[in-house]
Image (cartoon, rainbow, N blue to C red):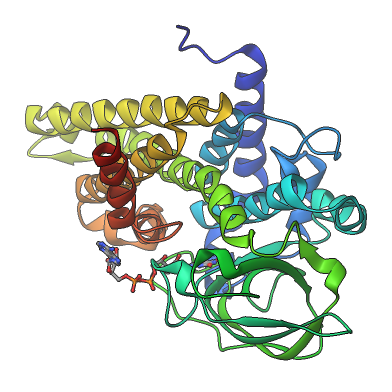
Length: 380
Ligand SMILES: Cc1cc2nc3c(=O)[nH]c(=O)nc-3n(C[C@H](O)[C@H](O)[C@H](O)COP(=O)(O)OP(=O)(O)OC[C@H]3O[C@@H](n4cnc5c(N)ncnc54)[C@H](O)[C@@H]3O)c2cc1C
């Protein structure tokens, strides 16, 4: 058993961290205030190979492992969790296209997806179905011209911003077996968007409802086979959960680094606050929790990379554990900054707000517990 990162993995982490600190961190607050991430950023990220981190090399992707990818998300999230998480969604969609898309579909979309001239959104949730995603109602009726889509997707990260949408639709019976996946390009007739959601965190990412009103999509835009869309969507989520957890990890590390520095400078009762043993113990507790979270996340990623039969359970456990640890840590860091932690200038309150949603999306942490306990009962 070897817990060390390889030289290549350390280099990937360092490259992502350097890019984030130079090109994202200085602008993160301004992008948050603007409610959008400049589109020009994505081709720069694509040029680093981050548009298809675990898209196979045969398809032109970086062909990295899931473990490698978590390093990229951890490093970028040190600059801004909102930007890093948005990239994670694009990567999840890119991988779905690579794994299940036809050669024709890949030829048409993959080059621009990898260069990030085409940014992808993932559309599963609907106003009436979130956790119970298989109850989705958006219908795609097959006609001679292709599929005609009707319905609404809710909470879509990149809604009204992305260049194409990977949409889970109902083509058949109720339940998961009646779901298919199609790609809908921005500008398609019958595609429209709701108003911008006003959110607690992830504010630089535009979130909107995505609406389909007799939206015609070519039959060639079906991803894989009809009726397999729910399986594809769930396969995407195993890796997506690791990435979101990695985003929590990176932000928590950043907050802890900032807090360590701050505690050496800030004085109370005549000495730096890092001299109070009660606070030193809190630092130790955060470090222990952070290191445990990192090890657990990397183990789950390794399980997914090696095709372990319990990979889904481990991804769910890691997502729950790491996102909750990350939120606890950034909140503690805010506390250790006193009143200054509550001010935007100190960079901590944004992390508290950004990380909260990681406990809700890519499957809520209650659903993560459901996946874990279901597997435990089945194995009994
Ligand atoms: C900022 C943001 C961005 C998002 N981006 C996307 C996106 O890009 N694409 C996308 O498809 N979706 C996206 N989502 C949607 C997200 O995945 C859902 O909000 C999430 O899956 C929960 O669904 P829900 O909101 O309908 O909650 P519900 O499913 O209504 O859940 C309500 C509560 O009940 C709990 N609950 C539900 N069922 C059970 C159960 N069986 N056992 C125990 N507890 C249960 C939940 O954990 C939760 O606490 C986004 C959400 C947010 C907030």
